[in-house]
View 1 (cartoon, helix red, strand yellow):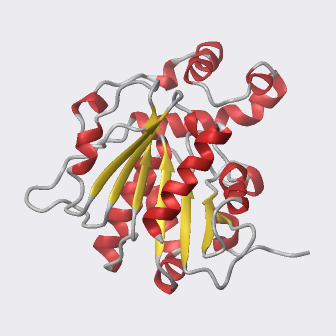
View 2: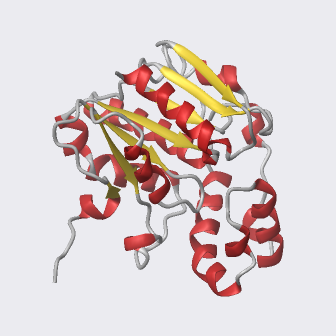
Length: 254
């Protein structure tokens, strides 16, 4: 019986590209897995190795204890994957909750290891320090029915999953843990220099709810840009948008 290392359970790098110039680490949205990002390898150049982050409670980590605390999740990702971060240049992409994770891991790596991504891509999420983030939705007090309906309105989760009680018994716990993580996540910009100096790009769909885009420029002293495509919160699941997004990412990091 083959046992996977902690690093192997945390990552889905398919296929491995040992000769790649750079690694692109992709952080999931609430309840998300790794297969969506793993498929990016089919489109991105061979010089980019795609590594999707697998959080506890899903896929091969189904039996792992769920994490609903940002600092715990960030420390696990950064400290487990530090050999990967130290061995080759890397970039981060995160959508929705994944944007917050990617940002926090970037800050953690800079603080404790003196490392930063060559580029940080954040998608579909208001800047961490924005006043809009102080307005909270108490997801944990919702009944299962109310919670499912709220997730349905956000989009991104297939209806065949949301309407299947047996499947939702599997997907509900990690979804609730992730929403709890975001609900209790707060961030204050430090006085003085911004926490990062790497380039940062914000991407989103033009029909998503308004986000504090300028606030993302305040988290870095480096270059800031944004790229808006047609679509809602899960604009990146549209094939044409996904292809454009990957072209944008490849251009920025190569």
